[in-house]
Image: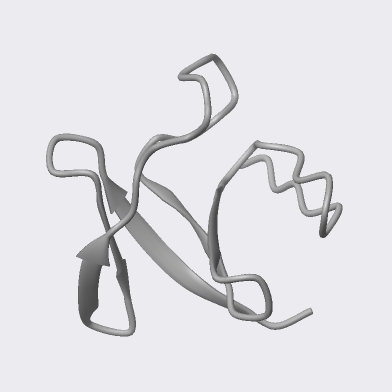
Length: 64
């Protein structure tokens, strides 16, 4: 797995990775323990994974 730290803007539905910003639709439910703003970009699957969300493909979960 190849992850890069990323941020998400829920107002514009954009993700920023390494200074590059692009459109990415929000697919996760806002809930306690899941960040709407911080997470990681999965470079292998081209997917934003918010901190605290279990990702079925990668098994990634990060709880701050």
